[in-house]
Length: 252
Ligand code: NAP
Image 1 (cartoon, rainbow, N blue to C red):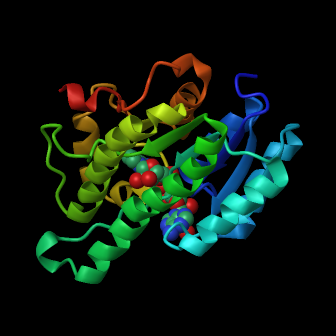
Image 2: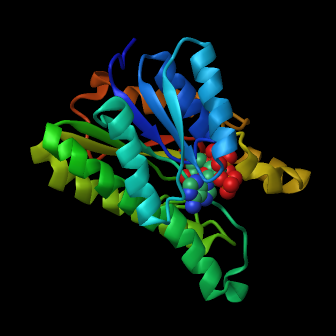
């Protein structure tokens, strides 16, 4: 029970990695706010947590809407009285050739993947600062730039993930006096609905896997174990870090 009595918010938690982050944190004793655009699916995750003896609530929250984020924070405080952990996880990856990418498509990705992280981090950090403790975990990606690989057809996604890394480092410095640790995780290819489009084309899937020394995609739970580590006191001297979890992809 590494997170006994801790309160965690996970965004984009109705499916994929957000779901497993919520389940793993709850298994370690955290009371979890499971949030996403679809309340119905969040409630299913909450049921799973409760059936294993954990505590959780489902909250509808579109991370592009400041009012919904404020409501999510209020519901967390009303129910659990504090916020110890934020996992900024909600994100989209829409493939589009750069020369055809519209301004709307660019804005949509940046609004969810980057501005959404800012809004959630700020709303939660204000509460964490009052209690002089907290942990923020930002889910970035190996597609964050400066890794020796360019990722075609997702320029907006790469820009958002690079922005997350820069923001993580800035917040780590700014929030350290409040005893708030801020770290990022950069996953490689992980088995979630987000990679369905890649999986539809066996050739591009094989080409991707050929670059991964472990020659497999990661399991969502493998990333959740890293989220747990960064959320727990076991990582008490870590802030401003970007931890890559990619089966060795960036090592090649
Ligand atoms: P996923 O299964 O698609 O989950 C993402 C979740 O975020 C979905 O439930 C999605 O809801 C939700 N979401 C989208 N827009 C939202 C918004 N405006 N407000 C709140 N929630 C919203 O993908 P995943 O792979 O678990 O991705 C989780 C995170 O890991 C993302 O930040 C992603 O960029 C990152 N990541 C994934 C991989 C990978 O290979 N899977 C690799 C590196 C990084 P809808 O389904 O309704 O859109």
